[in-house]
Image (tube, rainbow, N blue to C red):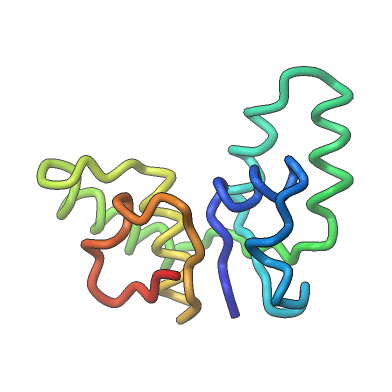
Length: 119
């Protein structure tokens, strides 16, 4: 099971499917934070509709109490030393709680997290 970071989905939506082409949709997940970040990046209604349509094949994991508690702990631990952002903490926490690999193009945002399997 692989959780996809927002930047992977942005590349996918641009037509660069090579990052995930060796996986099936049964192996790939996104979380509700990634969905919100993609919606926030829409520049028009047609852009938003394009995003909604093209991410519909991905299974979406919802944030819940265990994920939010871990994300809060990560921000507390790593904000000052590594500038940990809230959205990145929730994405990383989702992968950690579900024991998934996290695929991201921004390794620097996650590389320092013990217990996170980053690809």
